[in-house]
Image 1 (tube, rainbow, N blue to C red):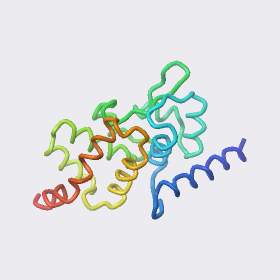
Image 2 (image 1 turned 45 degrees about the vertical axis):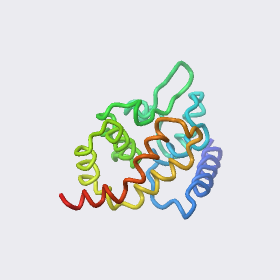
Image 3 (image 1 turned 180 degrees about the vertical axis):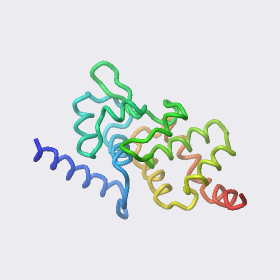
Image 4 (image 1 turned 60 degrees about the horizontal axis):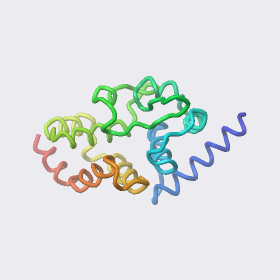
Length: 174
């Protein structure tokens, strides 16, 4: 079983290297899992065991992700929840002692969708995301790999990403 898990991890690393065109850098395991899921499955429900194996290969436990609102279990299947499927509080929950980068991105998208410009600016400034190249790179990569270009998530990313420089300028005024 250790060998199979090592193989899954290797395959996940290879897939992420293909997704990130100029290297992956340091991305936390839940964010890696989110990107791989969107790339491989899009918005499809996945059998629990398959989701468990993918999470395990990325170094996280599916039960931890369920308890923080990252996933939702539907019978024998798992659904990865996007920015509009979760509560704002769920983005604040740490997974294995840290707040995943993907939670920052999804929270920003939800605030953007609600037109909460002040809360969005506060979130980006407080978490030092305005000038965080990895934040913007992961958000862009998520937009690029999303299979369903008509999804709410992809639509929000398509609106949010072009505002990067404007958000940075406004953020520097505060």
